[in-house]
Each structure stands twice: as structure tokens, then as C-alpha cells.
Image (cartoon, helix red, strand yellow):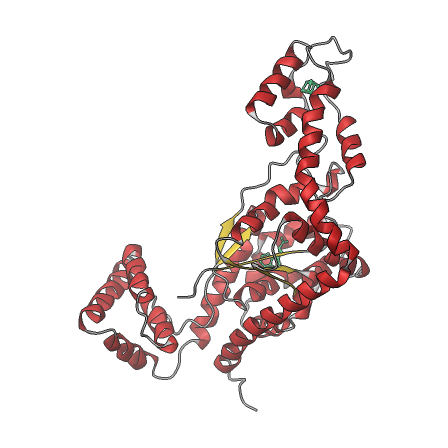
Length: 400
Ligand code: TRP
Ligand code: SF4
């Protein structure tokens, strides 16, 4: 019932590297051409695990926004903002907490996983338990339809869907809902009203998903319905009440296969990263000193690319001809490792050049970034405010 809207957030916990670029940011940059996009800095989420070191969050926030802009996220297309500057997220989090069963939170797999993984930190806090619910508030407050996330976050989206359903179930029933919904059906006009009712029955009695989809597209085509009637008819279709919060879909971003400098997945914790805007000299040096196939002790020793992390970078950065050249040259000792690395160095630098360039203007004039974020926060607050009005009303809080 709502037009597609993409929302995603990132925790500001350190500088971004090429793994983030290939795994997430490239995807954001593509999506901004297809959808309405909102991207935000999840600084409150960072506080749930970094509550004892809050000062790094501020610096990471600005660095991260510059990284996004450097990667090509375009503030003219996407709305960029900071979670804590839209306090409505906290209000929705609080209100949703009233109806969130503790067991649902305890069962979210990341809860126990992260506590174990970050065992040096005390994460038996209220805030950390509520992490997925805060994320639900982030998503539901914008009525986002699509949430690009990695595999590990899918349970959070599933959880969000359940919260939305529960909210709609508890608060979505206006007095006289059934009557109003039937009246709205009539307004569709004879033939369409009949079709809607048939499809609804087919879905509700036989669980026919196709019928559900057809009914939804039927409603999508109805231009003349009032917003209230539309919501009613969508809600009536699925058996619940009025849909106040809409259920988002996870949009799985293919897991980044970006290899790090040692052949393992690129990750801060493996200390094998190239940061997004790393200076050229350091990038060259990092790649030049990468380990290679240990069999190639001397230049004249033949090697096997399958045993070499540089070869994995060729997979990301080189065309077929270059790959064939490297593979041949390695196997018959026709080229040395330094030679083999050069096209990779060139390709990484070429990829980063526009990023370094774009970043420079923001580093030179930090007010540019501040203004982009101030703009984005204002837009976000407006959208969030609209949802909150409906939520407060549904929860009996719109008195003055
Ligand atoms: N939990 C997400 C992560 O760790 C970050 C996040 C917070 C988020 N709120 C969100 C992602 C809302 C998508 C939508 O990556
Ligand atoms: Fe690796 Fe290339 Fe050296 Fe072979 S020639 S070991 S692929 S760097």
C-alpha cells in the first residue's frame, strides 16, 4: 500500500574499508537510482555495545558519512541522517516496548551470539536486549518496505515484521472496523467490489497467496480511494485491522566475498583491510607486501595461484586477459609476484581515486557534511512525525 521505500543503517564503530564498499555501499549507490532511499547512522545502536567509549562514536559518525559520500551516495537522491537527531525513534521504541514480549527479544539469535562474541563486555543490559526493537522502530517509523541487510540481520527484520503485525492486531481495530471496511468495499464499485471480496475469501479460507497478491494489485490501481479506506481494505484483506505499521521485507545484500590482504574475508578484526580512502602510498605498500604462494621462494620457482591471496584480489579487480596473464605467469614462473601485483594495485587505486577526490571537498569544508545531515534529519523527522501521529492516536495518546 505504500510506495517502495528503502531504509538502511550502519553503526559508526570505526572506519569503513573496501569490504564495506563491495558488500554494502556499492549496493546503496545503485539503489538510490531505483528507489526512495533513507540511510542513517545508527549511533544509538553503537552505544548499546560501546557505552563505555562514547567519544569514538562522534568521530566515527562524521568519518562514516564522508565515506558514504565518497563511495557515491548522493545526498540529492538519498536522505542521510543520524538516528539520535530524530528522537522520534526513541519514542517509538518506548511505545513498542509496551507490547514486546521479553521472550521474543531473548530468542533473537544475535542476542546470545553477540554476548558470547563480545564476552569482554558486559552486555547484560536493558539497552542491548532491546537492540532489535530499536532497529524495528528505525524501520517502522519510516514505513520502509525494503531493508537491505546482510544475512546476520535477517532475524531482526523477521522480528520487526512480527512487531508490526502485533501492533496492528492490538491497535489497528478501530471501533466499527468491519462495517467501515465493508462500506469501503462497496465504494470500489460493483465488479471490483465483487472481485475484491472473492479474492479476500480465497485468501482467508484457502490461504491462496496469489489471490492475496491479485487483491493487493487491485487496490494499488484504485486511485480514487481515500487513504483511510485504502488502509482499511489492505487490513481487511489479511484479516487484521487497519494497517498502521507496515511490514518490511529484507533485501538480502549478497555476502561480501571481498578478500582481505591475507586471503581471509576483509575484516577489521583480522587486521587485513584497506580502508576506503587510504592514501595511495599505503595502499601500494600493503599490496606489495602481501603474502603470496609460499612455494615461490625465488623468482624462478613456479607457483599456484590457488595458494595465493593476490589471486583472489585478481578475481575482484582484473579482467579475463589479466587473469590469464597472471595465472600463466605464476604457473610457469614467467612473471614475478611484484609484477603480478601491479595490476591489482593499479585497479584498487583507480577504484579509490574518485572516492578520495569526492571526500576531499568534504574534508576541506566540514560544514558541507553538517548541512547535508541537517537537511536529511529534517526530512527524516517529518516522515517520522507522520507515523508517530498515527501511532500515538492508535495508542490513545493524542489527547492534549
Ligand atoms: N543492526 C544493523 C547492523 O548491525 C544496523 C541497523 C540499525 C540497521 N538499525 C537498522 C540496519 C535499521 C537496517 C535497518 O548492521
Ligand atoms: Fe600470487 Fe601472482 Fe605471485 Fe602467483 S605470481 S604467487 S598469483 S602474486
